[in-house]
Length: 349
Image 1 (spheres, rainbow, N blue to C red):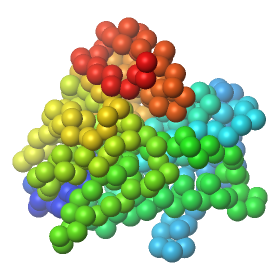
Image 2 (cartoon, rainbow, N blue to C red):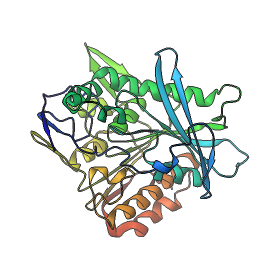
Image 3 (cartoon, helix red, strand yellow):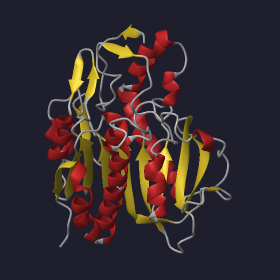
């Protein structure tokens, strides 16, 4: 591998990827990328594909005309039409990812009767890993700037606007229950979801408020702190909607000159202003165990953590949107062998 010299980047959104920490960047498969998973489905760019596994998906290459910015999406849907408006998860990928990542979550949501719209952020997606390796540092620095952090939130807002008011003949046309919309994301995507859920940073003496009032809950996987900001509580106290925080004791970020442990993810949970929030910390694992990449964090543990994250995410949505807490209460017993810590502040009864 080639180590490239770097400099400390502006981490306005607290990018929790090991490539943006400060001194050096290694050229290797990024921890938040798709990892080669789902290659067989990449011809599905224009139309729904029935997988035979209880869900379908459709891809669309949207463009936000106001910003002249592409916003590619993948929408996961239940295979059978439910005859009612669907709850929705609006998902933001980590650094270097794409709309095709985190398919284990998108497909699970759809099988559970929840639509899942996975948004690709072109300024910080898998495209940054292409091109000359000698220009990688500049691409990474660009992905860490304030402008891209804000643009990612605008991507979510535009995608939600488009989904809720589709054009005639749009293959993504589907009925969405506007009272049951959740934001979700992993790593950098978790920060994006937090900003869309009410987190505020201050710039030039003014608070930057990017909250989308249509979002009623948030699933935050490996959420890093907002580096460059000292008052974490001040940033996250405005996040008052129900939140689920997921991490692992091995959810560490290591590069020369920078080290961040899973306690940073726990600090985000503790600083959140929500009165209804839950925290799950798995024993072991890795930062990229929550992506589609198989094996990372342990060949045996990896699929178990994914299954537990699937179950916890849908249990969270059932509690928040439907007032059903049975699955949430049963979750620790079902997955307790791999859980280091679990705090449930969501149950309604």
